[in-house]
Amino acid sequence: MVSSDYYIQDNSNLEDKTLDAAKKMYQDGKFAEALKLYQGMLNTSISYKLYYEIGRCYYKLNDYLPSEEYFKKSISLEGFKNPSFLYLGNIYYKRSNLKNAIENWASYYAYKPDDAAVCLNLATSYFTKGMRFQTIFYYTKYLKYAREKGDSYKTIKASIDKCNEIGTEFLQKARNAVSANNKKTAIEYLAFAAENLPTSFDINLLLGNLYLEENDYMHSLIYLKQALCLDKHSLDVLQKLASVYLNIGDYTAAYCVMRRLLPLVLHNQPEYLKTAKMIKRLDESFDEYSYQGHKEWAMRYDNENNYHMALLEYENCVIIKESLKDTFKERIERLKSFIAPEERIIKICLEKGGEFYNNKDFKTSNKYFSKVMLMSDKNTAEYKLAKSRFTDV
Image (cartoon, rainbow, N blue to C red; front, side):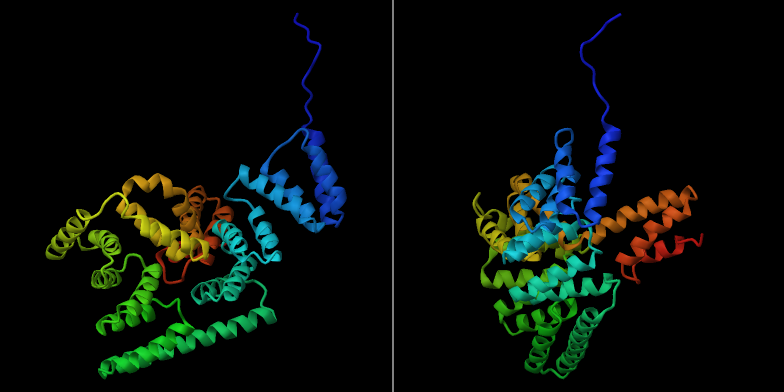
């Protein structure tokens, strides 16, 4: 028989009781008492959830320095699905640091885009920065996900509805002016429409095209790039952007656009060969530092919280110099999650919902399909599939 002068004690029950007690104290508003219990658990446990709870207690006690420290510790252990980002955003906002506030709120939005409160935070912060594209983008998300329809909701909805109404009205007026061969008036109408509804693909595309026809390449570039942010696979946008960049002599940008364009003209042999020939000619003129201008723009856009444009420029760096793929991979994926997190969540929910549906666990599958219907547009295949499988139980 082997004996030992020590033994390992199982403290799991004790920890569970401590955790329950700490949660109860937090819910009762006894934040200092809850904090002591959570800190006591640090002797035996380390987890991102524990750090998060300690950060929350400090936050409620208005002690933001240690609160920030523990939220960052939590994120160091779990850097994606972590509500610490929300509180960090709040802390930076209280310090008037909009850049870091938006970055952290965007990180929270990346895994929980249907949180109306964070959508509203992002919208109002971008409004403060004077970035209208992002402001309208997130106000629209807020209206989509808000459950409470109070006075604030009604005010924002009335404002966004008015923007949509004006944008749609002046887009139609511009189209009529184009039909009458009055480009100058059409451009005036579209500029007003874009000011009210900068997130409209049709407005940006038409305005960019009209400026291109007038050889006003710099104005054309502004609106075509916004259109590209809204639809990266638009053949029309990519072809027009390539023309703009070639005309202004920005050959690295033209090269990147044509590399994006090439797969879309695969079945149009003359266009494919023409594009491939131009890509080869431009590629031969580059050196190992040709990506540097795009890197500078990417970092500038990133610093301004202009994530749509930053993503395009980081991707351009990789297109020009493939060896940079690992260097920018993490940031590119992060920016993608900031901009369109619903796509990933919808895909996951359809897969999970389908598994439970096939196993006839309809109560669980309904939860996933409900999420899909909430996040997707009603005219999409994803919404229709989820709706067709939603089962009354």
